[in-house]
Length: 331
Picture 1 (tube, rainbow, N blue to C red):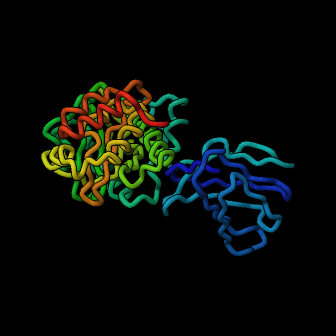
Picture 2 (cartoon, rainbow, N blue to C red; picture 1 turned 180 degrees about the vertical axis):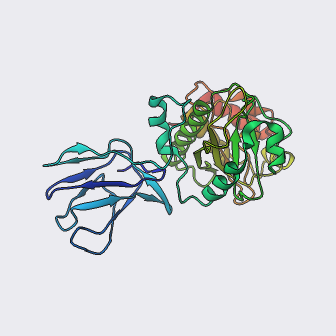
Picture 3 (tube, rainbow, N blue to C red; picture 1 turned 90 degrees about the vertical axis):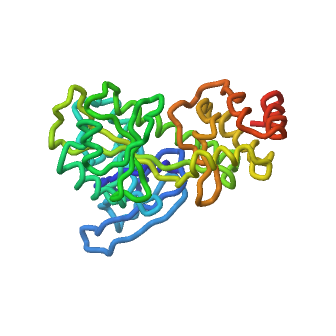
């Protein structure tokens, strides 16, 4: 099966009859759009759930564009052909690697870049091309971003803008010393692993994980700050409850059923999400009243501090949660 990453791609290659096109082994699904052939054949769309695709002699020249949920995606660098013309195919990327990002890190980042056809891509380009918005906190305010009262332990800004409905941004300003690419990549990897746990343990009725992408800031206007930033994190807005309402639900026996507690336990234990033992890091969404795993920075950390959630639960909830902590669940 093919792993799809949301990242714009235009990949052109010439194949020979008898070749097979291979993707990564891990996958959900994929769709390959074939361009016109030299003989003028019509564009053809192929759909398959297999990790390989046979090359038909009628379509010897292809422009390969994987799609996921309507957004352009990119396969991993393991996209290859096997047969008479065995080779690794090279990707063409619309983004330019920032000077502060090492080559090895850019290879990790590329699959997670914001797609060219993402709904807010043009808005981001327009906003960040006019002025250096990440120059400072004051620049963010002047550009119309709503800033939180607290930045949290990571000290990054979590901001919203009326021109970016359905999404929010996480960023560091040019005044902050933090390394942006490492911070955003770590969160994306945590979200991916959390999503794997949701799928593995069939937790979809109770838990969802927001989609995250990395956006490369325009090269101009240039930074004048001491710590220039080049990347920001784009996050799907889960439309979560007010903190007080959310806290009240965690203490409500009618809502925090054994099934919901077990779902949280499996998620946290499976992904090692040691910061998800707080209601404010797995808040309830207004849309469907599922837990939203919004803090995925700390993952693969075992054993998780399950006890930190206990005080937010009702008496009966605490009893069952402690039971889970002591006895566990099949994983």
